[in-house]
Image 1: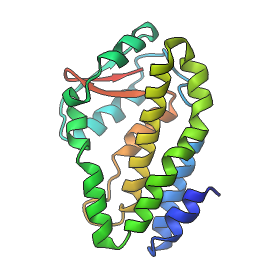
Image 2: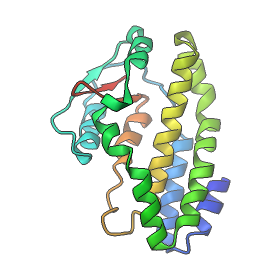
Image 3: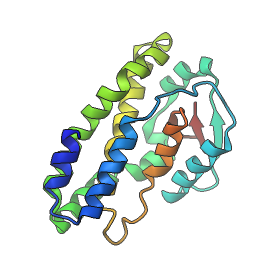
Length: 196
């Protein structure tokens, strides 16, 4: 078992079911076949969770825009987080995590997850992401790895609080479903959820 499961869970003082949930979620991340479906388009099993994720954060009626592989580099260069509808909602979530964790007596566990989850996801994802994305340049590889660490960190932090009122639905499960199908959700640009 990884140190995140040991440290991030054993320090919570919470019920075992919560600990098991974080552990299971973390294990899902380390077993993803990263970008195994790159370039394949038009999958409703990918589009539906993207819409659910956007809807959870109040970004309604988004269309899904599938990128062709040759569009990836220019799309990455064009993304501006300040214009991303979902990012506007997500940028406040880490502060909400911290406040809720403090109230619940789980700040130490949250900080442990924040320290340990991203590096472990990096370790498990980098080689595959590099192999698939190397032709598109270092910036694309770096951006992809950053996205995966961010999604993993946010998902595990949310799961740590998921037994508390208002935190029962972890919206990052929707993105995990997309990652597990071998795709990369890039965010909402001009009312469209961009994915490859």
